Each structure stands twice: as structure tokens, then as C-alpha cells.
Length: 185
Ligand code: URA
Image (cartoon, rainbow, N blue to C red):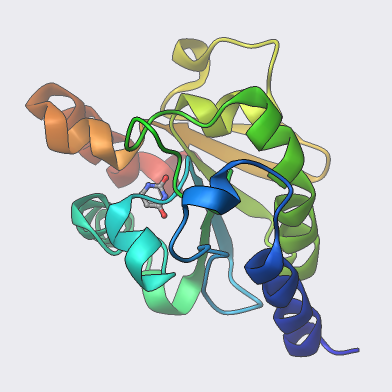
């Protein structure tokens, strides 16, 4: 089976998934999107309300900021990135809460298969939920703004763009981090 067919099959599985409680409240699952040979694989926390309605990742305000941050790094979102999240369905109630450990555990096989399939060597982790999934023993603050090698891939760690929308201070840090991404690489 070629990459496109394998991703379509995976997306169908995600579309029918009832492995956790988020499947009861979701409108649409949000598997992720981007070229299947993307240089950068980007991982958020979980879909928000806009994403839940459309089934597409990062299309709300966080998504707009993410696109701008990637442009600061010289990265073209649509051509060079595959974007998804730790969980594929909207965490609620309350709306936009962090996904719970059992929801992450139920969903993580989909993410592992996506990473394998796309094969990007560079992964950008958006925020502490994504960071903890890969580096559970480490402190987010020790790694923010840095690249880190693990298992033959490189991981760049920074805040979730939603933090930059809420607080100007985080937006400034995000901008500085993304400007430096390819200098630090
Ligand atoms: N935040 C995320 O973590 N993922 C999305 O798809 C949208 C917002």
C-alpha cells in the first residue's frame, strides 16, 4: 500500500474511533493534514471548537499565529509541514481543557503511525502536553526554545501558540524561538 492509501486508511480509523469519551462529544475528529513527505511534523494539544466543526487542524486564532510563527522561521506551512495534535478529538467539558492521560493513551497509536508514515526528521512540539508525551521525565522550561535529539529525530520545543494569543509576553518569546529555529538546528 502506498503512503496516500495508508494515510487514508488511518484517517478512516480515526473517523470511526470510539476508544475514549471524546468520541461522544466531538462533531468531527481532526486527524491532521499536510504533505506526506513534510520536512516538519507539528504536534499540538488537541482540536479546539473551530477544528471540531471543520475536521481541520489549527484553523482558528492559534492556527493563524502558528502560520505566522512558521513564516518567521522561513517555513511554509502548507508545503513543508504536517500538522496534528496529541488527541484527535475536542477535549470537553469544559471546552478546551487539557486531554486526560487515559484519552492520550487511547489516541497515541494514531500519532505514532502518522509520524512513522510521514517520516519527518524534525518534529515541533507545541506546548507542555505535547512535550510530556515524548519526554515525560523532563522539564518543559529546560528545553523551551531548543532542539533536542531522540530516536533518530530532532524535536523543537516551544509554547503552544494559544499561550501567545492570551499573553503578549508569550507571543514575544514564541516569535524569538521561531526566528531562531533554523539557526539552532
Ligand atoms: N490547538 C491544538 O492543539 N490543535 C488544534 O488542532 C487546534 C488548536
